[in-house]
Image (cartoon, rainbow, N blue to C red; front, side):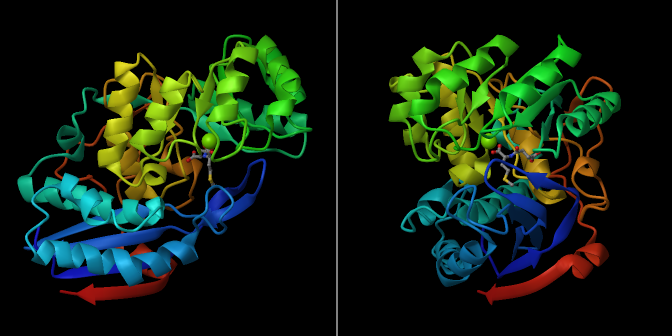
Length: 373
Ligand code: SMG
Ligand code: MG
């Protein structure tokens, strides 16, 4: 891959409804899109960073700065040094920068799109996908009361989604989960705490065991593995780690310490698709299922999620809903729509398969920057 130009764009794209978790509320996407151009190929990736550094330590402003100051110049230099012969060369080329994984992921995703297009191969086939459709569900944010929650869940079930995740926090955990479970006894249901509890809350968290949950996601601190290993034996529900698993090494540590029974893979949190495949493979070797999380990606990032989720050990439904669950109008002309069996169809076109709506993208771009090689 010999790059001639790298472009970054900040977008602002309102959600159909605000999304509220245990620690923050977001009104719309603040994603940074990355465009790579070279050898006649134009490729796109996405860093699905948020408005604030409340999910992890990154936000749109940190990613924007690190990409301009370090990552884009490093990628350009590696490309001109002939060091980018395959998409897996991107991660080592950016390794000198610590952390900042979402910032890196946008560039890494775009490189996979570039190689897919250049080789006439779909992203799914490059990644080693084994499925043509992937099972998906919806992550439901914290609502103002239980009646509203039941209405919102009912709406998603009516659309055909068959797995629901509830965001929980102290004061909005056992009762909303009970209400949903009582109303839909057979629903595939799970909860996500986004790191709001502490090990001392173990007895309280064990109350969730009565609801036959698929998993309890990231109950404890965002960078913890050890306390989760102490919590898991106190719960019947499987613990799933999200925030804590930022690299293949973190996945190995969690597996070795029995800190979880399931891993949520978000390639943006892990810094790219190459390391996400590593996490997938480590979990598979340990007999641990994984599923694909979501960062409310635009249509660009969503195409990468659907392709990755088609790998064999993604055996639980992903937080990868159809584009219209997030945006009234997305920045792609080929949004994903939900199949009647609660799946999305894996794209087969070369590269990621996302087709940009260039005119609409212009209207939602709030900043742009470019580097020429
Ligand atoms: O993309 O549908 C989606 C959202 C899935 O709940 C979701 N993501 O911790 O898993 C998670 C949260 C993080 C959201 S950050 C705004
Ligand atoms: Mg989560």
